[in-house]
Length: 357
Image 1 (cartoon, helix red, strand yellow):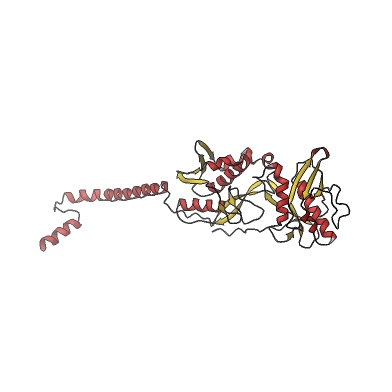
Image 2 (cartoon, rainbow, N blue to C red):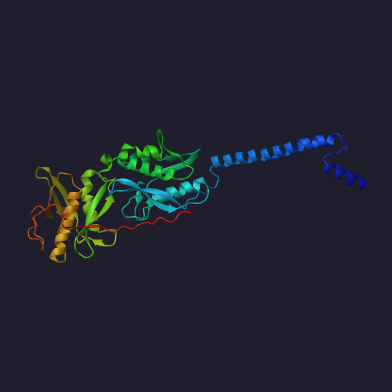
């Protein structure tokens, strides 16, 4: 026992052999050894952290409580962000959350999603679109199915821009690489800002303007809807069909009988006119003469707003024949755009930005 006690005392003093001359020498090297061990641990920790980051396994906790998700504003012809709660977890969790928000309809009825093939009622993707994604340092690489190439050029430009702006808003992404087989686009916030696909000349006809009667029956209000996927010859037809369906927000309604069908929309360039052929169900319209006149003004303004620029008047046909409509003095004449009945816009739902941390 006495021997072990002395051995421990020698070890504690840094002189296990009991050699007095060696004792100071060991103490000289002891701080260097400790510093080396500390440096080795620090370098190892940094290396492990970098490896985990490259593999997308590190947890981010930036000082932001929300992320910005970009949608298309057809009334202004530009992309506009909405705020969403900040995701938690690893890099793939952040990316998946942002993609999920892009695939869902926006909160504001003034905006529309640029994600193609989405059922707007339930937010479900109807055809395969996004194949996979991964991080390459600070670049998000997103692989898409061939259905990506089926988008019209303008819709593709808007989608690519909305996707890129949303992703580069995440704290660990600097640019986005979109790949479809041999096709590849590399985008950043700077390239999107200078993209000719987002200029006013390219997106001037990306919206449908619909006119509805306000809830008090005093005049007309206007709603906008995206027309990115609608071919120009069908704009008026689609606008009238949506007008018959009615407004999507409170504070407006359509007085057109819901059974009414659009039989034909016929432009006549020589007279700068548009003929609208409606089914006989349209004659079932009910209401005071003033409301009937507002309904006609809503149809006419909707047709002319979504027609070629030179169109000046609208003629009505009922089952391909000229008919009179109760409440209208002469329903066989050409009707022009009426600004006097306009009141403004339907109030939109506003998604309020939450306070950031």
